[in-house]
Length: 118
Image (cartoon, rainbow, N blue to C red):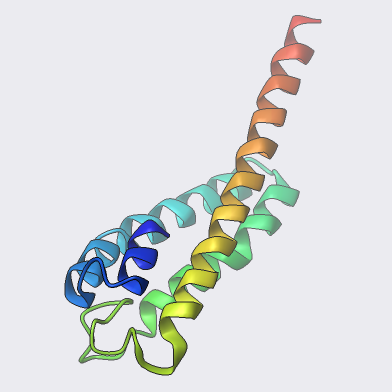
């Protein structure tokens, strides 16, 4: 979000912004896919179903990158057709999702520990 807002305010150029963002796309896809599969294996159905759409969207977005582009974030197209605004909106949605998941996982952890002590 900070990198995209810096690009929006012209503090950094499009090429350096996109290279910073693109180096985190593959770890994000892999990490989220692993978490989703782990929730499926451990039979946490609600958390699995909550993670599935985001994991699917990340994989779809990674696969559908046009062949000439630098990555998911392309410096030649980031200012075209409001892509910067859509990337910013997507980053805010993911931030909200990750905050929600953090508190859900924390609640589950504390409840399991409290249950184990009883």
